Length: 117
Image (cartoon, rainbow, N blue to C red; front, side, top):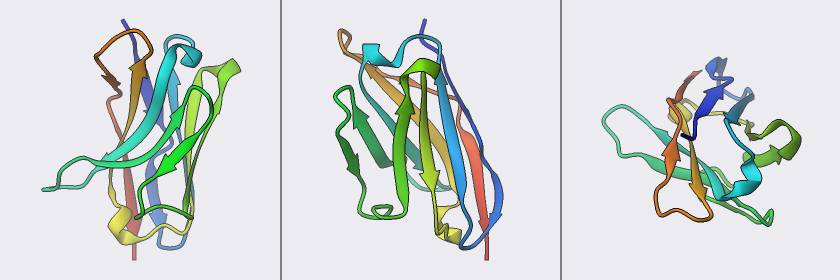
């Protein structure tokens, strides 16, 4: 059973930075993609950033230039560096992993990010 555990959320002022971590229970090289999403109250879950097993990345326009996805294979961890945070970035942030040989995907439990104005 794959487990993803997010951490690093918290309260930050507008313009500040946070780095989220997503630790996987197995080697992240076994995943075709790992991604970050967020969900604000009353809104649908929103795609933010993705990294493929080959290292290519893709970002939502809303975070391009402010957020950076990265990984540490030795630690089985994916990160989301978030800079220039805005109040509208307030949401629960989720990690997602899609295995190479399975049609299902896995989600973490989420970590709350609150940006004050």
